[in-house]
Figure 1 (cartoon, rainbow, N blue to C red):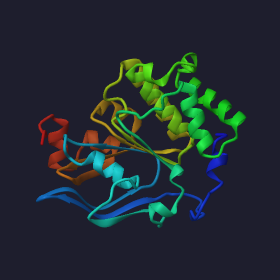
Figure 2 (cartoon, rainbow, N blue to C red):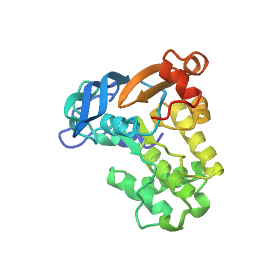
Figure 3 (cartoon, one colour):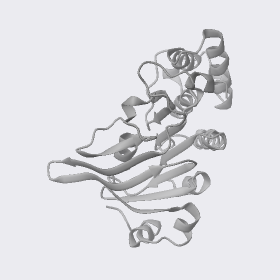
Length: 254
């Protein structure tokens, strides 16, 4: 991708590292009052697409925000290629939330702004933004204000903006939970293309069909901890944990 060029030019006091992978977590603990919200002893992201699943309140969103360097922990550490996240250019790691935050500008200007902020020259930024909108199926809406787009279109725009920056790792929290089927199909294709192009993705999803379609590995979380980490085929065909079997049967609700 053309925008890989901007990733190779580290700025400020960022450490010059060829990759942010592996992203590693060890002994993570987050506690509120007497409740342990996150308790992860060991976990790493090394490539491909990993899906994080589990019942509501299991700590899925908290884990990806922590791995993305946006959530502080009471104890433990997250390292990107052996370094603290603040020492690495964070543009190399992206995060897409269920409800995207968009600027009060046109769809095209939202992507151009992100690219310009990353140091891409104006002409190249517009070219890359147009290409990103086309990939998302939004080229006909380039001049439309982002705020008037449908929910599915806004999510596709937010993903197109994230991918235009060519992140090495992209975390996604329920990116298709509240969108229409057409947008879901488009988002999944964008993620599939990104993964095939070398972008590592970590996806929180309640859609087990989506997990089967996109992921190579599955992490099942229950009550803030990881109870199973398996290749996707093995998890669905022969889950190793009682919690995994209960979740697939629809019996694990809390």
